[in-house]
Length: 252
Picture (cartoon, rainbow, N blue to C red):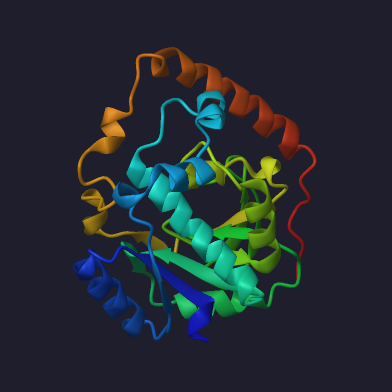
């Protein structure tokens, strides 16, 4: 079952790979390593075929760094892997993920949930999102629908149907991958989460391998000062509009 757990890791990040390997051994989860796309080595052709500057200008507050482009492409490799191997669902991890010891049992519980889902986020940002509906899975965890989807992509479960939807909608992208998943209506995805979070970022995430040169800061522009509040307003309005039509969680 190792092809049902994918770990994204850069070739040069040997220490991170050793650390995530140790964590997965402790929770007895076999895995497949997915070689991450190194943004610093991308050709202009590779960039242009995946990243849209036009879309970025319309939907995000600043241009993406090469590291962020590579990160997004790495996640797309995982989505394609799910489709190519016809996996009903898959756990996708970045190599700085810390894992709760109860994670394998939790995955089994989620797989027994017989309602359709596309993405289940397993790592919350520091500021918790408002829960609008929830379903108790066991004494420890509950499945949740949020008013606003958590942004981090450190660890999440992806169904086959979710992978197809994301690949079809994100042939080219303009936002970072973790931000993009928050816009669930753009890919018609059913995105949920787990509380409390069974995955969190390790201390190594403070020193990002995808942005080791500080390229993310270099992409900030003066236009971000006025674009950010406008984009936030559009997002808030879309959240309100699309949440009205969301179907609530149902008991097993």
